[in-house]
View 1 (tube, one colour):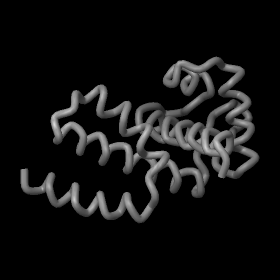
View 2: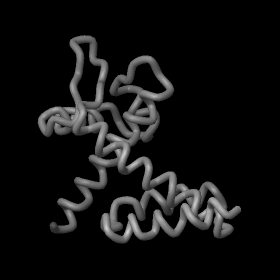
View 3: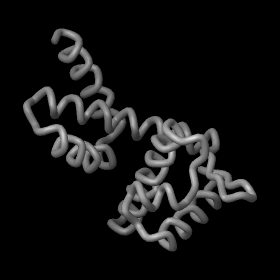
Length: 130
């Protein structure tokens, strides 16, 4: 995967994660909610939603409400779990929570499944002891 493709996948994951988080807080998620949460322009979000819909990660109602498909929800939950675990681990190590969340967001896109699962096992073990 080249750099542009990687950045595109990173962006896709960020959108899905944001939709998941917003859907836990709001009764309905709209493009404007995503734009506000990510501090992106509405046109940028509109293009991204079209891409996510074409890739079967989301569906959109006639009213413009956005819903994760099964495929989209699975990926969003995976990314969000990784983000939360890495954030908690960095905070445990003494990193400021705000910086930890920013760094976790960067890390969650680049770590392999194998390395993540090994880290997850170790981190959960450490966090359970404290």
